[in-house]
Image 1: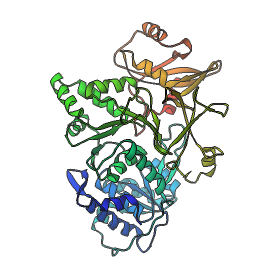
Image 2: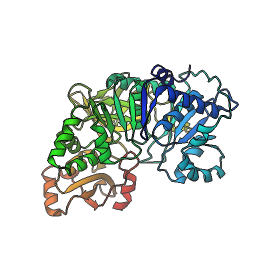
Image 3: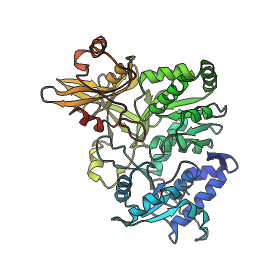
Image 4: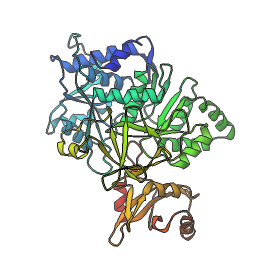
Length: 496
C-alpha cells in the first residue's frame, strides 16, 4: 500500500482538490503528478528506504505533489522554510543528511551554492521534473505505517532547532483526531495562508482538508484585503491562522467603512469553523474578532512533537484564555515541580498517544531526556486545569518567571498590558537579577505616547506588586519567527 492520503485521493479523482495560482487541480491529476515525481526520485531504486528528501517548494499544487511523491517513494519528507537564509537551510540539509532536494525554480540560485558544502546533494527543479521522462513509470514500494515519514524542525525559540521525526502512523493519528474533533467533511473548503514547514499548516490545514476529500485553496503570500475577499466566498467554510494574522485582519477591517464592515461580518458569520493556534491567542484579539465576525475563535494547543493535543470544543463553550480539553486518543497529565501528578495547581503538560513523535533526528540523548521513564512526553509547557478546561500559563523555560520565590506567568501579564489603551502589543520576559533571581521585563509597542507615572498606577490597580514590570523597552516591532511567535531569546539582550 502507498501512503494512505494518496490512496484516499484516488477515490475522489474527479473532484477538485487544490486551487493554486488561479487554477483548479483535481485529485486524480495530483496523484498522477506525485507518482511521476516519485518515479524520478527513485531512479533505479525500488524504494528510497527512508532517505531524507528536503524540498523548498512554493505553496500549492507543486508542494502537495512533491510531498506525496516523497512519501509514496518511501522517503522522509523534510520541508524547508521558504524564508530561511542559506546558513539555516544548510543546517537542516546537513543535520538530516539529505541526499535529494526538490525546489521551485526561483530557489535554485539559493540552494546551488550549498551543493559544494560538506554533504553534496542532488538538486531537482520542479520545471525539470515536469518535463522529464527519464525513467519509465514503475511500481511503487509497499509502505508500513511504522516507517518514518517526515522531519519538521522546532522553532528554535530557546535553542538550536531539533528535527522532529514522525512516522506515517503518527501523521495518520494526528489527522484522524482532528477529522473527528473538528468535523471535517468532503464539502469543506479551506484557505491556507500558513507557512508549510510547520505542523499547523501541513497537518491541520493541508493534510486534514485533502484527507477529507475537501478543497484547499492556497494563497502564496498574506495580504489582508485578499484574505478577506476569499473568506467572503460562500463555499469557503474553514479558516485557520495564527494570532498575528487575526490581528492584521482586525486592523484592516477596522479601517473600512461601517457599511463594508457589516457586509464582511455577514459573510464571515456563515463560516463553519475558525481556529487560532501556534501562539497564545490574546483575549483582546479573540473578543475583537468576535465583534467583527460573530465567531469565537477555537483555540487549541499543540506542538511539533505531538501535533494537536488539546482543543476547545467544536460545539460547546469556548473559554477565552483557555485551550479546552484533550483531543481523541490523547492522554494529558499535569506534573508539579515535585514530580507528582496534580490537578489542583500548575504543572508541566505531559502527553501520551499515537500522535506523539518518535525521536529527535540524530539526538538520542535529547530524545531520552524529553520522555519520562513511563513514556510520557514532557512538553516543557506549564498549564493549570480550571473547571475542566486547560489554561496555558506559558513555556516553562521562558514564560514562567521566578522572582523572589514567586512563579509568574508572562502570558498573564501580557494579557493585562494589552488592555491599556496606549499599548498595541507586548511581550514579557524574565530579566536576570542578582537580588530577585528574575524581574519582570516588558517590551511594548505603543499605539500612542503614554504617561509612565499614570501607566504604573494603572498597572498597580490590576496586578499584585510582584507581577508589575520593573523594566520597560519600547519598540517599533517585536522579533517573531515564521509562525508569528515572538522569539523571546532575541528580546532578552535588550534588557541587559
